Length: 274
Picture 1: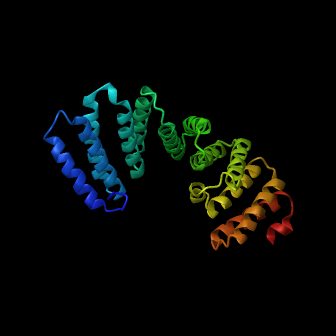
Picture 2: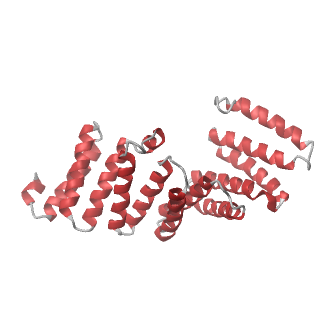
Picture 3: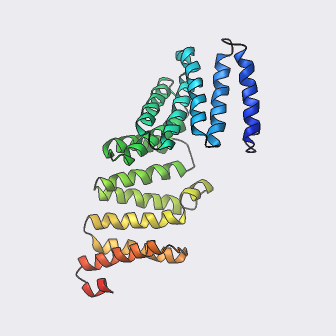
């Protein structure tokens, strides 16, 4: 309740009091103490105290490891949480990858039914490898995440939208423009479909994302020297920018520069100068 109300100091006081009492009952309450340590870590994570969160997660991990093979789900959850922390530190990608892979190992060992956990781990690994320009491995993990998410009964499309956008960027960076374009167009169709449109999707699918998707599609046509179709999507981006009252002059200059370059490649020098 305190966490829900964002009264984090009160929540920490309660959790630490419970942890102290469980410490008096070790080793009987070892499993419960691990749960409390993870709760404390989650509160510190919400407060953006990453090092303190990491400290309590590792304490929970040590307790869980002592409990043996019967706690694969709980171990997977802790490894995943530690992976998230290292990922958020931005300078510890290798450690994040190691912990995410340990989380996968334990989730798969437990035959985890919570597909969401696996999807998030696969997606996080794909995102890390994309940022480190290891596109083949990024594609492999993102395709696994996409396959699981598509086969799940989840009617929310927010996670699928995130996976598809990153996968499309990976294909674009691999110069596989046709595949990237199909994915970006699919994302547009998902999010423009009123039946699938939800608050969760709308948070991700911001005005800026709409413009970015049109730009991605236009760039994919440029990569294949299909300048006519590229022009169409870039003009659509420019049109939507004006409708959405996008005041970002950098965006406008970028779009105008790209349109001018297309005019140049198509031989319309006068229009390019204009």
